[in-house]
Length: 505
Image 1 (cartoon, one colour):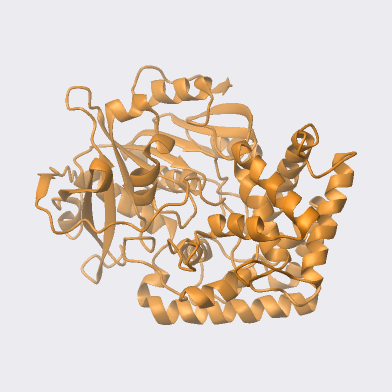
Image 2: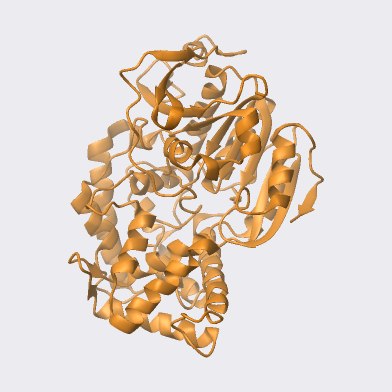
């Protein structure tokens, strides 16, 4: 996608408001840390006492300190924002950290605004559910690149060159260089320290600060990758980990983008099969015919952008984003029907912009509700190196081949990281040992953002991986309407039962 890569999925949580500051009220409780065996240099972080204060929606907020660079813990510090929903004392088992994905999604927003989406009632009754904003994200010390107007130009600007060509590549490179310069100028040293291993180290420190001897964790989408990095880095501190919408850490960025493009093409086909059975479907005849209409719509707005009621111009990149956004959940397919109907019958792009705005977390007033775009690029560029430049045009052709309708709009996903101010500190690789405890992985057969093959790949790399294979549509599987998935996850996390090596729902 233009402006940011699709790798590792996007947001699981619904769009939320900016974090309310958790200051000005006295602490309601202080955490008793459980630092364990750590070096004297790290002990001030692991033994820090968190002061939890009442904040929005009856929850509690706190701020933790972490070193900017874990290799130099005596150096600069950053802050990490946390939020929690407390379980009743009589039934409490401990803490459950949750991460909604991204990278770039706010765990604070997730818990504050989507608590019943994050976990079900069983887990709410047994765990203190804790969301945190990873370093670089949201209300933690954050990556900053563009002001709102420049972000609009970056995300919604109309591409003037033909898809998949050297001219289009040059245009993307120019945009990426300007974005990278702004990120470095407005963020500074933090930009080189937002990799997922650093976040995993933050997570272990937060585990200690809330008083838990081992980590219980539920990670969605990119959150599954973060959980796997934690298990690899701290295998002996793994409690119970659920990795939902799994990312395979051995898959390269360019291979991952191809797999995702195929996944979204598949999800679009599934939507069209459903749509053709509905009375209000704007398409007729067959899936292939409908795909042809969509391809022509994309080409049409590429050549002749359509003006929305707010004056913005709809080009192919924004329309592709608007198509992809509702494919994350079958419950959103009706909005895709509305968008296509308006474009086909009235040449009206307003719903297309509304869907793209939801995906990009852009408010109606033109402001951005989060820094997820900056965070996405900053984290992914440190987590894996880009593909060699001599492969970019070939990869663009491959994307168009495997996903004829929308694949072209995934092209040049490595451009941004090729000009990033900091080189990747990680590379795609199979996991090292992840400890003696079983880790639960969930893969959904119709998941477009984290295809089921990634769940298969991840579970095989875990020292003791257990897989739930969920037959369904949309991104991730837990708490999405399957009693089968929910019971297995709840029983595992609460210590009732560890599932068999393979389970199906």
